[in-house]
Length: 103
Image 1 (tube, rainbow, N blue to C red):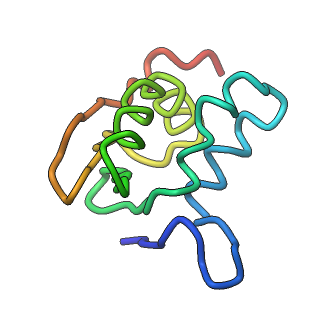
Image 2 (cartoon, rainbow, N blue to C red):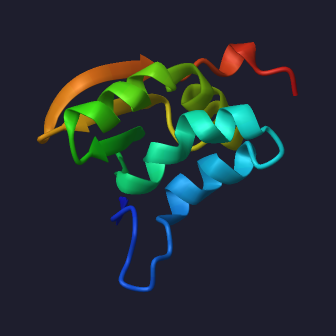
């Protein structure tokens, strides 16, 4: 399993979060929607990508950005499901639909 905190001591963003953000590097509107992902812990376990948010506002923003996150996760083949957590409690889960990818 891969686990990291959003920002490290050196102010480097988590590799999984960075992959998602890099996917939208040329789409400023999507990047703005995903900006709070930088504050989250992003990790994978058993085919699930977890986004652990520091507060309810961030969790709500990640739920709102769910489709954008799911598209990046599907195209990058990072996981089969995404779960958004707040206080270690699941607030949303999204399946990742690989069938909708136009390769």
